[in-house]
Image (cartoon, rainbow, N blue to C red; front, side, top):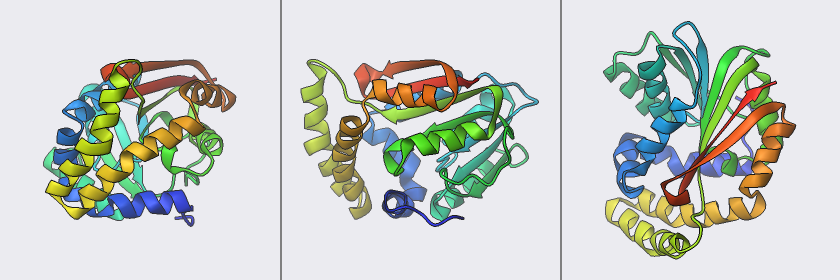
Length: 238
């Protein structure tokens, strides 16, 4: 695997210890929204049983498993964390999907696949952790066939009266809840709010959509979820 950037390495080190507990506590700390958002993400992907999807930042393979269950496709799940992949392999085996899902270690910035190798691609909570989102998007687009779908899930910033409630939760509720669970989750709980704010300050949603189009995607759409706490973006390779 290519050497990791500072952002990539920080993300890997932050989440590496959480693999065995990730699904349970991410569901709880997102107030039940994370699994719902992932299901919505998969619903935006247009593939069938004879097609193959690359799921980047697959983590514990939640999206990969949902893709196979919903569409019958094959999935290659890629992540830079060996620890998260280990948990993902356990989940895939428990779901009886080892024939349909292959998990591999790698970096989104340097994909070890030929051009147009996949029929579709998904990624989850990725662009906040890369040094050059435009270059990463271009690399993701490269490995998808013309006409193939790319869809992504990311945390958003709620608007209007919901923003103060979101701020209260990420500044106080999330770190406190994380501290109760474990030191690792406390670190994540303290990290997420500033990380999400910084990302949207640096790259507002409209600019993100522009990057998708500049990378060679068309019919780009975005859906805000749970009062803006999350959003899904989808486009098709031209």
